[in-house]
Image (cartoon, rainbow, N blue to C red; front, side, top):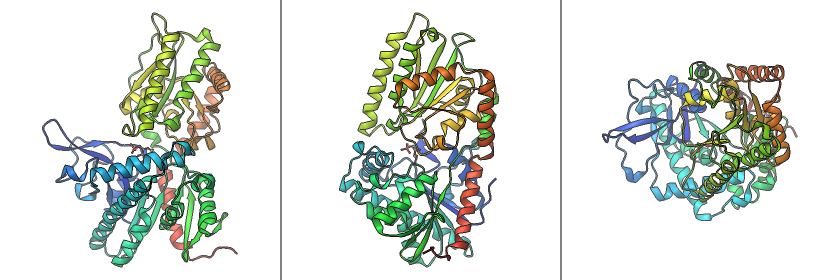
Length: 493
Ligand code: G6P
């Protein structure tokens, strides 16, 4: 396990589990263990740290206590005691304005460079600030608690993602008022947009200044780091050093780091080794696979169009291939997501109606969540994974597919507009907007000779095995510790 010398306080929109009432009305934890949770939760447990976040309930729900994990819980959060969890419970309306109104209807599209979908509403931005203050106040409580138990330690407060971009500054002020020293780090899990996008946000100066409340800021890619430096320089007039990735703000030096996130590689590999086989129409059938949250950034409709074109151009593949699309329901209260669902249902229905035969349908569409074991089986037994978002901070599906290739090697088709595209060079690249080429790339993937598949996949696997989520976590901790030594340095003139 990755070690940290400081007690870690994680501040994220979500707790690593959801609190729900079971059928008997008893409060239980429902796990939502993604890669981040798998890697970070054990560090919180080990350092006697805390996790601050939303438990899935609101103030009106009167949550009396956080349930302990059940004795048979083998998930990475099982060791997290209820006293290590600080729930943030906002009034329902405030939460709705903050989460749906600002995070998901404004920042999400804007940061994915889709400004036409973004709504800029002053009251939602105010709700965002209020909610961030509330998360920050609970984080200061967490720091105080740690300080009381471990007075010599300097807690590391690690804030996550676009829901909490203003929290660092509020936590800094709160800890200063208490006279407690902390290290403040912020990591953004989505792209950081160019200045051309950022300047569309009417309160961009306030936003940037609040992000700069952190001592250390991480993004997946160097490109996102440069975008951030550029915005701070152009909007706030900060002095920046692109080589050292430093920003001078209010007499403080803030460091910026490219830290591409990854997956728990071995966990996926082990799952793939034991998961039962996917049922096929016949042993020769080849599976094309897509796995995404149902989100307009994922290029789902573009994918269906490309698959349709592929079937038109290659009728010889009819009844020989099947496209399994798993679409996980997401943010269903936001209009854009509801509309996308309708469009996707319609497009898939049209395509299936057009090409299905008596014994075969070209698309198997699963709208819902599937188990990790089922997911690993799909990854392992697919010939091709289609990971072609229009824009994506990183995209972990590409990496999970690779980790699960334990049998016949498959082919990864990847868009350059996913963060993963900048390192996974042995994938077949595809621009999701170019339907014709997309269709040809699907054909190339499905007919690729075994030798080439083996070579590409072995190189992809080697990289992902070495740079897994623990490597990401170690690099993050190293970067924070280096910052403490180096921020007394100066910016070059
Ligand atoms: C993206 C974001 C995460 C978010 C996840 C699921 O990966 O970067 O912060 O948790 O989507 O979205 P949700 O709105 O359901 O938390």
